[in-house]
Length: 150
Image (cartoon, rainbow, N blue to C red; front, top):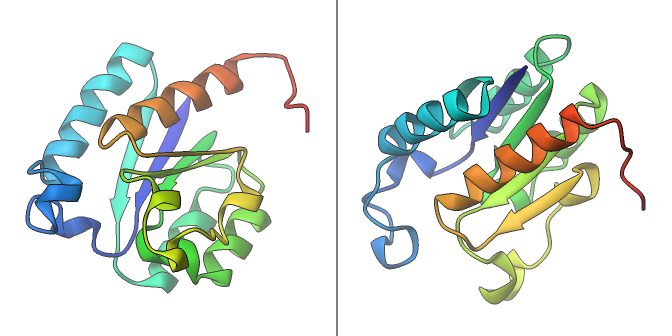
């Protein structure tokens, strides 16, 4: 099983950006931790980060027939990117949207996600553990025979 983990805009600034909200762990630290966790789960992951919307869209497109699932933290593109939403919808791969902070307890403009409606779940507010929760939930879903009930 292969899962693509996508980090969007400004996620390369982890460890520098607002440490009171995001902590001191860097993106490289996060990726190292996620690779170790993927071994525990018995899956393969590929991590990717870009500050460019079109590059994220192309990475999502490349997941078609190459990944079983996607975990995505679109960063600020969560609230603005119809293009990322449409790319996820086009590839139709089970996807979990994650955020380190609780976007619903922050500024009003962060409360609306354009991405969530095309994802099977959204996890926010658990810091770096949001990624692990997203991976674990996605893997459990992919391994199960059950369908999500709406």
